[in-house]
Image 1 (cartoon, rainbow, N blue to C red):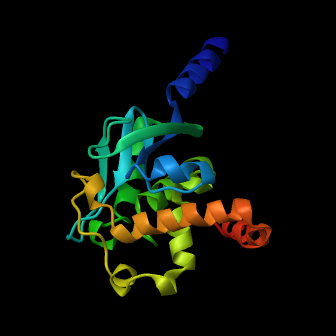
Image 2: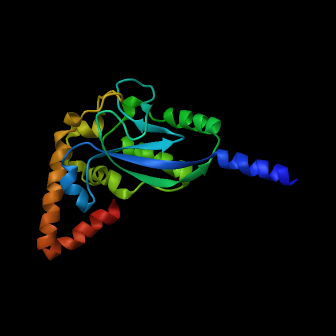
Image 3: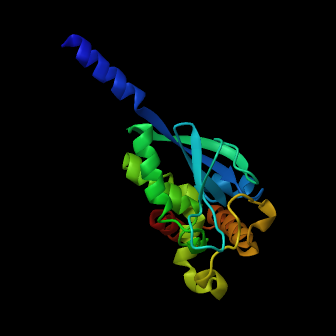
Length: 206
């Protein structure tokens, strides 16, 4: 009886693995705005020694891809955030990621409403019941809040980019501009007290 119990405990531990969020910079602008809780980031979910991300392409097939942890091509690794541990056999996880991948086609990628950080947040919720840190995708949420100010093309189309090739030079100019405006806004917030209410609203909303 004791041997069976010990064997079951050992099997359970073998099926347990950590879920990690790996975060990357898309642009050097992050070095200036990250202190204020903003930035343009890519993220991937690491499970069982592989990292899973979501990228855009022109075809109605999955845009989910896997790479070695902390080494997604074209991005600059910033940090990792442990999200929790799961008790799921590798075979079951393989089926899980296949199911999730079928819901994220490359031609449905959208910078504001369905980007790589939306994917990792969805993965995290399904696996651990927790959201990823809010600052990782805050700029996209702010963009959604200011949707009426965005170019119409960004509201209707996706980023035409193969997931295997990520380039910092491919960051849309409007995102860099938005990050700069956020930095300027934060600077004014430090100097002018009446900005405090709006700044608080943005952080609560995002």
